Image (tube, rainbow, N blue to C red):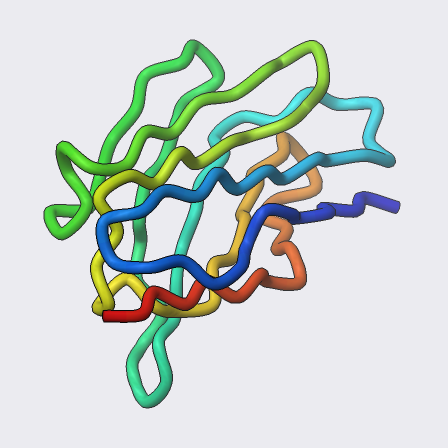
Length: 116
């Protein structure tokens, strides 16, 4: 059974940095796209960043220039380096991994809170 374990969330002051990790396990197939989404209270879940199996990233407009997505294919792990954090970045961040055959899988979410 595929499992995604996220870590790295927490409380940080505005202007600070955090690094999220999401480790995937339980699959004999390598993941295709890996991504981070976030959901703030009262808002819809939004795409933060994606990265292809070849390492090509794409970012939501609100995080461009501040966040960096990366992956370690040997460890089946995706990372999100978040710099220059703003209070509006406060949300639950979810890892999403797309597998061939299995389809999409979600992590349990990790809370990121940015204080002003």
